[in-house]
Image 1 (tube, rainbow, N blue to C red):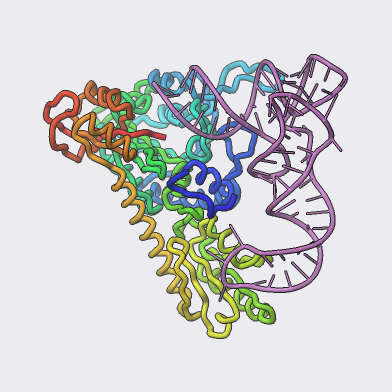
Image 2 (cartoon, rainbow, N blue to C red):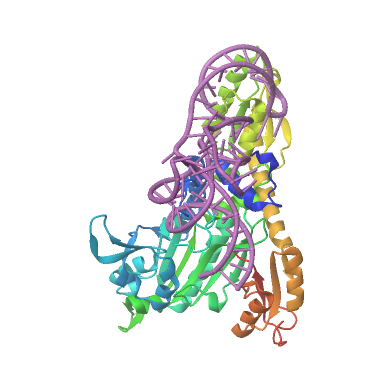
Length: 476
RNA sequence: GGGGCCGUAGUCUAGUUAGGUAGGAUGCCGGACUCGGGCUCCGGUGGUCGCGGGUUCAAAUCCCGCCGGCCCCA
């Protein structure tokens, strides 16, 4: 299939499956359901992205650590809500090929229980607090629903999870705010738009007091969770006996938070920024930022290739990830090839450019072609990188905003959803009972509410004065 | 949780209704010609028909189980 025949918005599923595989992001032929091979090109983009987050976490005082993948069953079972929430999707290791093990081990579906077992050993005094750690590791979840490349998998290969412990509820709440700030910066740096909502109580993370989710809207207009920020309160502290001695000599359980993001963000980024020709990577996470395409007319090959080599060297010396496509394909074929892979800027060099001391540039997002003098190449590239990023980011926010609709009754919400999909917000009194009725009546899923956004009008269920808007839609 | 569709070369696919020598396109390799948007031509390569079992003189085709992929509903 040719990428030119794909339509991102009219047949997103087909577009997505084709693009992630054809663009050398992943290979989904590995024979285990929900487990993918990441090819070098895709893995590079993933690592470049995750490093942004890791750097941010470090800037905000988090330290990277590593905790094991296996957790004994009895440790995993300490916090009952957590156990309940993850029991259906946690893999168990109970034997070698030859013999049955003495006790069962679980593959981490997320690392609360792994880390907090250690926290209880490490934390004794208020002087040991706060703890702010993170790790980027693989976690395993036996997804019962259908898996989708990168977006829903059974092995999440880069789960960046941060875990903190604090002296007071107030400190934990402050940490939640900080985490939200970090994630905002992270998604901003990927040019992704997001909606931050407090999760409905009946959907809260297993073992948590409350949590916030970041949502983006995919090209098929369904909502997808980008990341989650969770206030665990003292639930795990009590289950794992994580106590510290205060200044007055008394003991208290710590207050904890955790927040996580996975490679899913790359799947979302590819989906949101891409177009009918394929991926569009922002330059700072593009594995290849500039692709040089020689246009070697007969008789001019030597001069053209020489100039390509010179330009490549110059770009590399300036820290730009560049490459020359020296294959024997025709230029047109190369254009499509690198466009599919999302290289932000293409440099074409032909005899005309050699003659005039120029290069021809094409930006990936608009495909506009421009000719610049050799000495203007570097500043022009930096300018283009920025313009492309700004453009992607702007489009992403426009997309999100144009797909959030307001309705003032259940009927209106249903009608709008039927016509436009996306996310609908309706006035809500704030009571769980009414929230659940909104879900039932509209046959949509509750995504949550924004506590800082005051609603106007009356609750669509009970008619009492609305406190907030309740956001509903279909989730990935 | 319930229901449906599908699996043939690296990729896409014909053949399955009605059992009888697996065919095409694309890719890949060699060559010629080209090169500012997927050029053209010549020659070649590539198949445990997802896996296992059953029925049959004979299975890609029919039956059973499993694995993998996709879709819909709750």
